[in-house]
Length: 147
Image: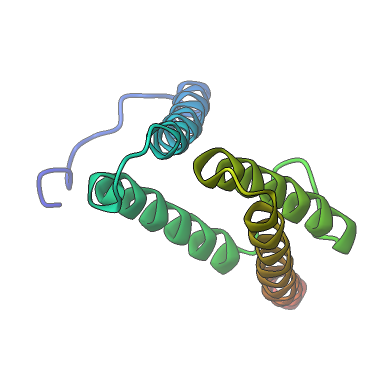
């Protein structure tokens, strides 16, 4: 990191905002394409060893983003934490996982069971994260009021 210390920033605030916007779109584009590559490889019959690198990267980025957002008390840029939103996100995840399982295994029963398990796990995790984010938001509000 010493390579970057002491360097002068030559961008003004508007350019920094544009840079952050570009990086934001690039991050999410790369993330979605990586997820799509994993799904495509699964549907083509790739073995677990062939997917390990991509899965590790997606998992590391996912966990890192979730921790960073929760620590800052940020939920989403266009939504507030709610049980209804959690249910929608969990349902979308469950349908996606069920579709992949159906494509890979060809079993409706396995797809339904996996989809149901995904819904329950995703909803529970989102609800726990919602509680953490709300606590952090309240703490930050109190800190700002005290100042």
